[in-house]
Length: 294
Image (cartoon, rainbow, N blue to C red; front, side, top):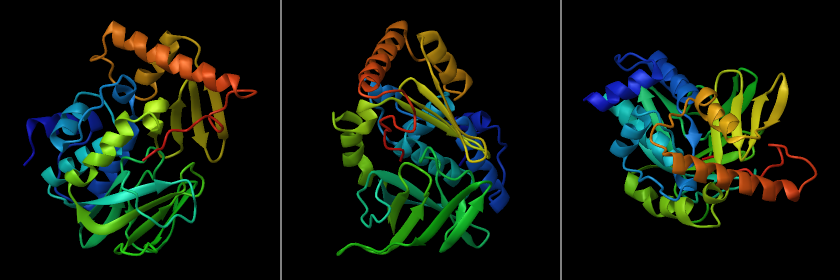
């Protein structure tokens, strides 16, 4: 059933409700990636939101973003309300290209429509603009290349899939074929959103992607990643510049942030950026301490 909140969510995406179709699924994922940022503002402010999908739908409908548990949790709820056959899956994001395990720090989706199954993900930050057919192969999407292959499981783990993004900072995401519930992600969400060794707690990050490239803000470095034009970096120097980028580039509403929130967020981002810059010759998003996207 399409609730009022889902109607507001669709309005944010700029998509009209329609019967399930492959074309409709592609349009929904593209709109989601273009209009809803991957971000960790509330984690940085020390008040991580829960991952109940109904809460996440309200957040996204109100102009906010989140990370994978929020984004894919809400997106799966919206797809279900529209009549799509959706399953959630426990995944894991890795820096190592030969990683085999599933550590549980990512929520992946599989959607079945018109007799076909697709890997769908609005929560990787730098993931594919379009859903990928859930079958082994290499997929060209614009000037990006991705791959899916059967997971080589560790002992005791069941079957699954390996998604590869060889040009990304985290080139592997493994996920199990077995369906999951949101309860399966609660413990990992608590760890990722509260512990001092978590990249989400240590580093501010915001990402948005479109058909041609990826916008990424890590700390005070704004990057545009384009396979044809290359990567361009710009350092943000003032809070006004920083918050203008959050709303203008990433479409993130700041209405719920008080003046104190904004001051605290900028102070935290600025302090972390200066600490990082002192340890390097020059700032670059390609060498900045990237928070885990996933």
